[in-house]
Image (cartoon, rainbow, N blue to C red; front, side, top):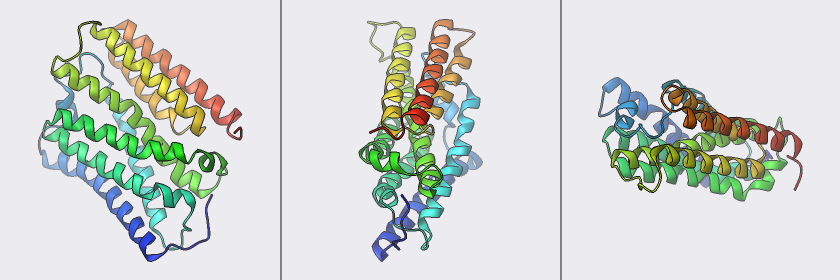
Length: 261
């Protein structure tokens, strides 16, 4: 929960580093788009998106994610913001993740496929693992506490989107290099990735018990439903069903079990 303890000089330095990383993460895609520097994200994925892809509109979620991470970064950088446990423990992990999502844009622009996979999984783990380790603090933070509104929600939402984006990035790269084992058909590989993502989403949602985490995952899976409904009904409805299950369990865990230990 929020604290009235004022940050030390070292802690304020960390906070400014987080703010700088957030600005970096937001500015990089703007520079890439306006300067037409390298491949766009769509071009990067175009030679490997036949196995599993998400409709383009789904990526509009980044506008909300960027707004959330900027709100978090600005608020935690203010000297009058208390040095709570969450601000302290998630500061450097969020710094790593913000740098990572900015670097991913650069990797995509340079068509560095395997590097992009490493970067996106590192960005996910750097944020999600510390949040899981702080589960009791996350659960106990009141619904209207500023740490929940301006830290847990934006960071959990970013972690949720990365949870669906990381395996999508992986299967796209494997498809581009024709590296998916032939033991399964591409459709079955895609459905397996959807199933694994669903299991992870449900498990993490049960631990964190905040709806901000599963909603972006479900959003991405609905985007997969839209992208494949005309050419691959089996995969399309598997993704839609997974999105429904994730939202249902996420809501149950958030509103019914948040206070349970």
